[in-house]
Image 1: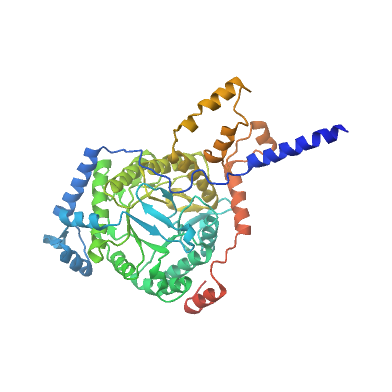
Image 2: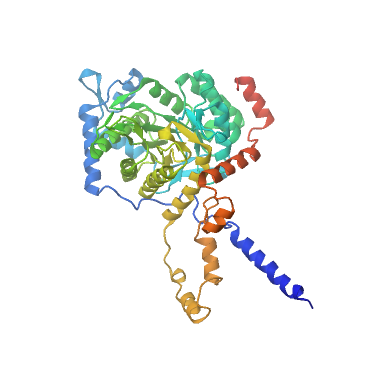
Length: 508
């Protein structure tokens, strides 16, 4: 019997064990939908004071520039006409709208397995934005974003499990016609993903024809409305304290076609809202409540994401600032306020001001997104791929942010304390036995159940890292994005569906 005969099985067994340990867990230890709400930047008296001020603003200052169609339904629901063509929204009407709003509802994916239930304390990261530039994968420089970029971003995120829904993250600047832009944006979503998706409609008259595209995708006329897998992003309130007619018209049309809506308030501290954080929260809450009352007056109980997005400008320059402690605490407080009212909350975080995929990028995204998640933001928009103060979108950013979300979900999952997990017997066995926990039954179980292992972050020692080329996170993310885009070409539209859409619409 040779030495090789003696040692070969042992080497083979060791390789198998190493391969098993290197493989990802069979079950994701911390999937999307983990529970937030532990971080509470506001006390109960502070929540009450902000809400009371918001009610005072709605009742005594009221909303301006109310379109006639909306004014009629608001007045019929209990609002009051004020001097100066403003409309007062009394506290009782606000209370009725809050009481009627659904506490949870489903955002459907075309694939039912990808649908998510939103509301309560469940946290989901997704996308948003209207970037006009893309960080080019090849040149590593910004350029105008295109329709091809939108298709590529959509199919890239389709593979990323920690991004729960997709909203177009960039504008196809090479499609100048507004109707063609809305049509081709919707087509990119239908073609490249079966996750829940969201889009925007430039004008109300664009809604009905694009719903025809959704019906083709859903299997026939009227089928989309039975299980709507697209929601609309709309900003019907313009800060400070007035409605925007075009967006209000889009709200009416979306409700008529049973499209769930995310009504977004996007005030900016020191510009369109007070620079004081408490004052900002009061005005922004009042404005988002004005959207909720509008939806309630049109159709009580209609599914609406209460998207109160506090935004910040650098008061030295007037430039939008997507990262920093102020935007972290403001969006966390917004999530806390919305959840305190029992509404499905939407906030915006992880909007770094960094242009490169660098330390600023990681710090700003990590701080702001974790704060919003810990506070219980149900839907955290803008949290994936956005750079350059929302002017840019990055393919590498999508890869890195997906991994960041996995760590955040693990932090939200917390620590389960039980007799088994406390491990008294395991500690005794290790101390009295081999003197360590490596290879122990409890260790192997915990490895699969309790730990999230990064696919991209480097955990090697410095020498191994250097021997492997001394790569940085930006480079590794770029390679991964290129691999996905080279291989993942989904066919979520059948040839018949695609032909029907192309017959009805000009697809570029």
